Length: 152
Image (cartoon, rainbow, N blue to C red; front, side, top):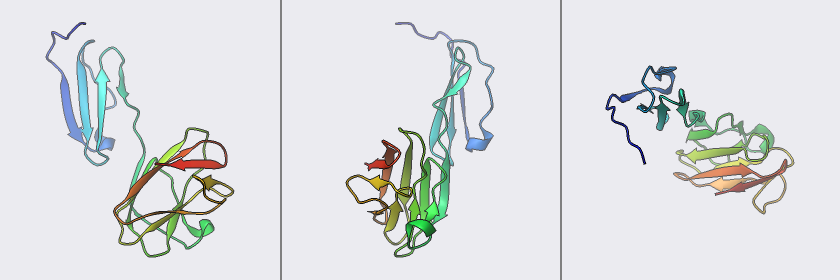
């Protein structure tokens, strides 16, 4: 096992948008950047010449909408945080290829209804039926097929 004899590593923090596009550090050194607005730590290796892991998209301060699948707020990010949730309102997952995931956090005052995309099902639920995320809760939804999602 090798080790770095260079202690010229880079440490930075700020918003995800302010993260440097690249670092000029020698091979074998590491760079770390903490994006405080999304809670993500990025690592840069002088040999890779790239930030890892790839950033996930984040949408915060969202407001739940509608009382049906067709009128619910459409999720556009990988991680979605709802801060305003009225009783009976919800969000709808965005369809993608198998393996697509979306995390939903409910920091609102009421339960949040999360619908699958039109024609889809979550876990063993009926087609188009929502699942409920209680206030203060969260769930990650994984798309298995074009019509089947699973939650954890």
